[in-house]
Image 1 (cartoon, rainbow, N blue to C red):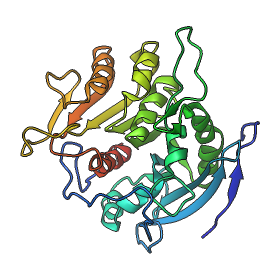
Image 2 (cartoon, rainbow, N blue to C red):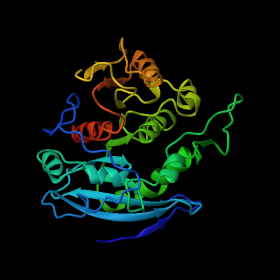
Image 3 (cartoon, rainbow, N blue to C red):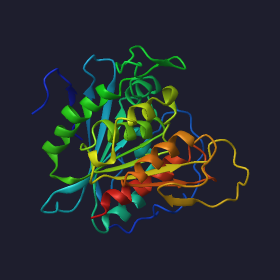
Length: 318
């Protein structure tokens, strides 16, 4: 398995029958795992008749954050226009969540290339690096960005730098290895990753065509994303397809409740998800193809898998 390390320099580098539909709840609730628990072998480490996996290593420009990028290529010829592709944040955890049966389900029709952007650590996350990379800069009243933002002891506000790494280093490296369809590129993230996904939509709306955010931390930094979104309008991303899935937030009053899918504005939202709903509501009213789905029986952690598998299905849609 080829392993190479890239250092990001100042100059830039030149419909699917799936195991789980977007409206279906997760089939099982995996046990809660500590962020620093070693994950062991993942689907990317095991033989598969459906996908071949490789890894690339990257460093941030300042050398403080180190990335492990998984690339899964379907074992079938690329379509004439190239493969669709999904870029998955929290790549270590995503690879640990996926099973070979998921790859088999994707393989039946129009399988996407799988790009898991993780950290070069043995665990699911590098929480310090993740907190910096996935959170947006907080704006001052005059519109300038604050520096040195710290939340719960973790520096944040590095989303633009991380977007540069994806755009200028990771994506070109993937495209140099695999033919991709430029019109079918999906970004998925959960929690801070969901926040980053929506931030990408708002700040670089043409970078992807499909966005899936699982229980995004939209309220982070005193609603920093919402304040940034006031400058964004749906017509800046005329072809974007956006899916937002949220969990119950605070403990649900009715644990037996079933998921309540909706498109656009909804009358009720899970406790603690008001900021997410406010953003979705505004973009829906502007005509964006955006849906909001609530899973009141699902915890924040369970939304990781619950949102990932529909994102894969969306990525494979023609």
